[in-house]
Amino acid sequence: MTKLCIGSGNQKKPGYQTVDIKPPALTIWDLNNTPWPFAENEVTDIEAIHVLEHLGKGQPELRIKIMKELYRVCKDGAIIHVIVPNPFHSDFLDDPTHCWPVTANTFRLFDKEFNKMCVEKGMSNSTLGLDYDIDFKIVTEYNLTDNLLYPFPTIFSKTFIERYLINSINAIEMFIEVRKGE
Image (tube, rainbow, N blue to C red; front, side, top):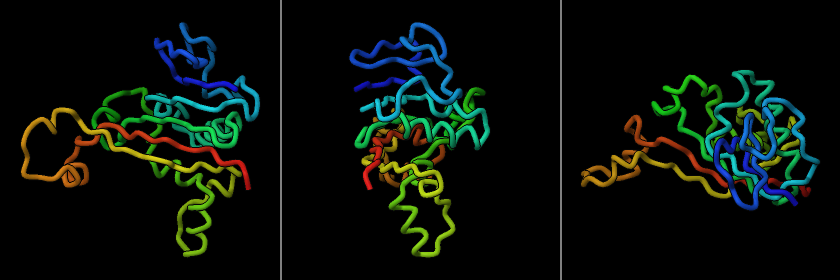
């Protein structure tokens, strides 16, 4: 089975097939082009560190295709490790190549269990997992904070800072399980 590091840039990740639009990646591929050059159910792990926000070219249809490819190439139980900039942080807003504001809720919309609960409760959430037969489950999710905030004593709790102060969470880290069994 294959482990992928997509959008690998200049990094070499031992044990992973690196994929990027340019060398030194082992596989040179524009991830906006689907299908990707990997077989169905081939991949056990994907590292997607600061790459998804660069994909999709601002086109919802292309974003869906990318989610479908993530799902297609992964085997049941595969783990996708994602880190993306918080779309409300200046790190996201300042980079002109950022065109997809990915959040944990982006992946929840492709969680069939969450979709079914929304339908049962009459909620108006998109049911993209059911619509496209994709099932992602967020196993863990972290808000990564600006390092400058926390070395200093503060009267505010970390939770308050994360929730109410702009630019306090600069990235979101998620570990997502691919579910293909019914």
